[in-house]
Length: 247
Image 1 (cartoon, one colour):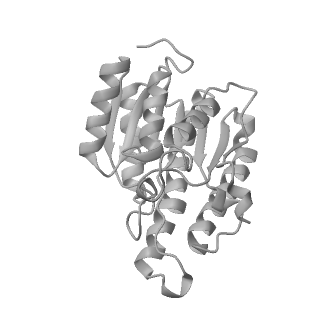
Image 2: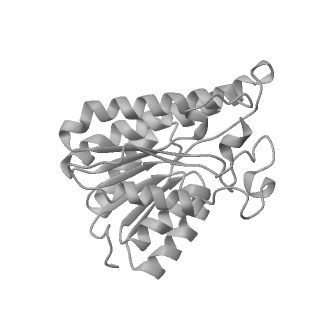
Image 3: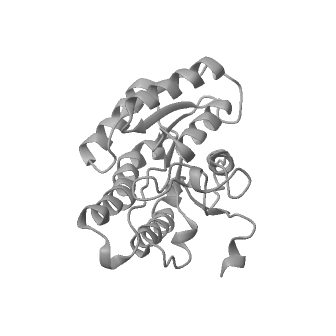
């Protein structure tokens, strides 16, 4: 295993097959962590796991799972602990943005955002907490600029991220005495596959240098994950420099 600030730790990352999740997996492995990769696309997870295992000599665990299914989340956490030996950190990254205006938003689009962004975050946190408590670990939620400010483009997506931020900060109050660190990392636009299901993916919409790269968000996540008791990073905002000029 590589020596590094996260050596001898095991971290589970949801939504690990692309974008912020894949960049986070690479960054955590570079910092020495063993990594469990959770997402629905097993082929992409396996390819990424093989890449980081070869490059950084860390252990990996591939878990094809849908975070909106509580049974699959339970199995993913349990198999991670069995395979990697512990669970010292969790990155709740899986998220989707569907549709736009409320009047034309379909039931399927609405449920997709609620199931992944809200329910998936809850299931992942619930199953992870007992293990994080054992090792004074950290739970990092990937929030959004849209979880702090109104988003006229997609009010439902924004609402899921407002829920996530409220849940995370309130959970911090509940488990802080147990030395579990809780962090919310809030990016604005990131060049990833986000928005690809119902529109133009951000990595196609924006050119390199226009908005934040997944690797920059991954750096913030890894920084939060490196903190040890009694310190935690409450939140990190990773915004494009001209973001507020659009108000």
